[in-house]
Image 1 (tube, rainbow, N blue to C red):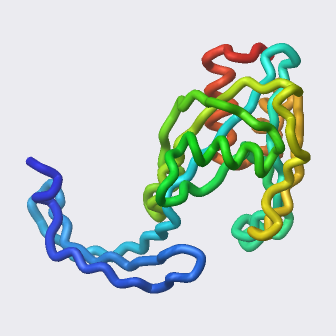
Image 2 (cartoon, one colour):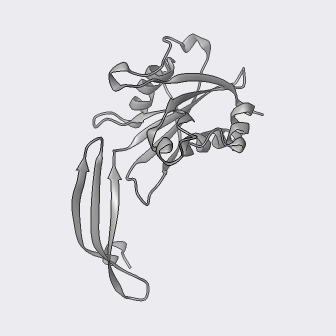
Image 3 (cartoon, rainbow, N blue to C red):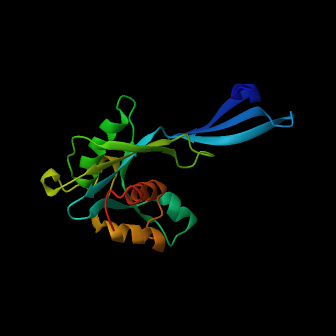
Length: 197
């Protein structure tokens, strides 16, 4: 059975178009028992994104960022600052690679020429349309061209962190790193033995 045969009468209603687009989607869905049910879901569309873990294979370090995130503060006011890999939204005309090269320089001050895409993932497919393109790249001090910190016109205030890879892995276990894309990239590097702890 083609999946499209399980859906009909799809109606999309835009609820908000502020920072991104929030839609309510009403649709009929056919279950395995043949029964059709009318369902309603909300879908938040902010486009796709790209993220990168910079690692230094000689020093055994990684570059991460720390910045304030209102959504996690909203649900738990003990949290708010998030430690993450460098990341950004993909603009309409840019590729994921072009995006992450630009974001790397803006956020952490390193100018890279290339990066390796290692994963693609939806971080919350029940609510978000965003697909993340996840990259890794080796860095060294010769690539440092600016202090980083983000783009002032975009109201970014980003702290750049250089950590031992072993410390970053430990921070997953302690709950200091709670961002999904960051955990995925750190564990990718760990599983594939790109850096040794």
